[in-house]
Length: 267
Image 1 (cartoon, helix red, strand yellow):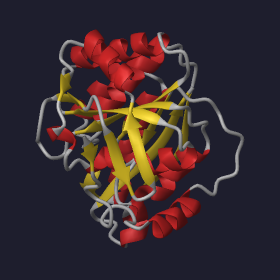
Image 2 (cartoon, rainbow, N blue to C red; image 1 turned 120 degrees about the vertical axis):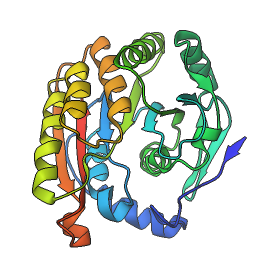
Image 3 (cartoon, rainbow, N blue to C red; image 1 turned 45 degrees about the vertical axis):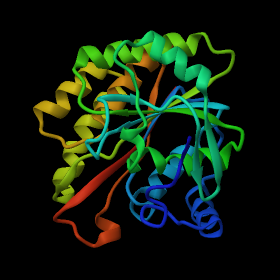
Image 4 (cartoon, helix red, strand yellow; image 1 turned 60 degrees about the vertical axis):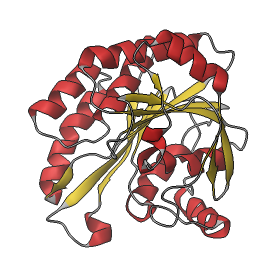
């Protein structure tokens, strides 16, 4: 089946020309590219978080395979929903699902469920794909949407991802789609965000999970990020680097109620 764009024209430009111009703007960073195991990237409208996401994507090599983990904002579908076949249509082309990798992941993790409903209207995964496709037109991916998981389930899924990755013949990029703290004042959001960012930079998934819940940090992609960290650690991650950290305040002009955006690379 083809999954058609749900948020083109809302979160990012709907025409190929306008989208290309936006991606050109956000991918301007000229740096030596690194080989990442995983990344944390925001998923708001491009006018708010596109610059942070673009800086992350511009600093890494984009391999031919990606696993994109996102939170479930719609409440639809299974708690760990994997779309196992077909393609996603975007203004800048189509991106196919890697059916072999999807099947392997489902075999390795008992609670992963084949389910397209959770992906039907979810924006947080869709907004990552134009970046990936622009930087590697040959890329294939597996989309997984996650609702709340226990820490033990995050570890199980992360370990399953690592096992599948180790059996691949080529590199895999694990994308954790997440915004940071939501709808509090700019300075408080920066402080709360930093607590979560520090745990990610320490590559400590259990600390991240506990920190976010204990400090009431409304990091919507806590589950995808925790899962990614478990997988990255099993795959031998050596370091984590903060690429950028912003809030929506400078764009919206509203500093009393902002959303935080962080971009992090795990190598």
